[in-house]
Amino acid sequence: MTLGEALNRRSDLQKRIAQVKDRLRASVLAQEGDEPPERPGELLEELDSLCEELQSLIAQINHTNAATKLPGGETVTEALAHRDVLALRLSARRGMVREAMGRGGLLGSRYSHSEIRMVRQIEVSEVQGRVDGLAKERRELDTLLQQHNWSTAMIE
Image (tube, rainbow, N blue to C red; front, top):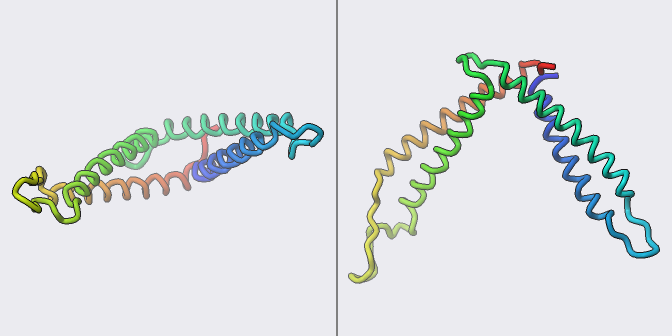
């Protein structure tokens, strides 16, 4: 199984676990004299089985990510951390640009002399340029990770 297939399986297991949890909630109470839609005990057994498979799969994915390297020499775990930090940096800078460009185009203008005038404290074009660069870096890293995921066999 490739890492990409394992990641898809992990996603499927997480969805199935969520569904079983919903079915459990619907089956724990029944009107006196009625049967619940499903037996809670059987659902718990299914949930436990899915959770055990998920735990094993997550450990195997993490082990594979820590042991395999991308062409640049960093491990997949390091690349994933890098991608997460890029997302944080992008989010902060996009928020800055949005705020600096916001207020319905009223930035710097006033309705009356008593209203406080808002003045930009950043050069939007510079920050936007950095946003564009970080976004490109993140896209390229995502592409590299995807290629790696579909060409790397899981480590047992």
